[in-house]
Amino acid sequence: MFGSNRSRCAIGINVGIVILLSCGTCRPAQQEPIPEYSLNVVVTEATTGDVISQARLTLQFKSGRLHRNVTYGAKTNAQGQYTFTHIPKGTVLLIVTAERHQSFGKEIELEQDNQTIEVKLKKPQAQL
Figure (spheres, rainbow, N blue to C red):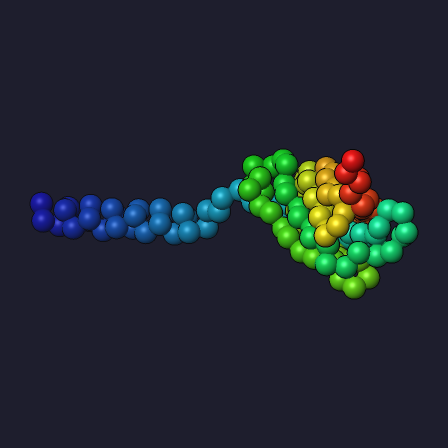
């Protein structure tokens, strides 16, 4: 009787080890990586064509449950440009503001890399 318990115990340990070893090779299903893109923004003055440096740029995600609450912010350089990099695929809202200019907003579908958006900001309307 003592010998048979020992055999059962050894079998139980071996089965447990086999189960643990086989679980070590189990992996969850891999998700496809979400493509990331670059978005170039160029900001100029609508009537003169002059570049607007230090314009505030905001990208807000409009779709996709993984990125819905993600917001990117930046300012344009001396040439009125900024490039957002590593932006996940999806719909974003681009908001552009600059001193002494009207604000600009546009939804953009990021579906390809290196898209360029040209924004022409207008001066505010004169008050009567």
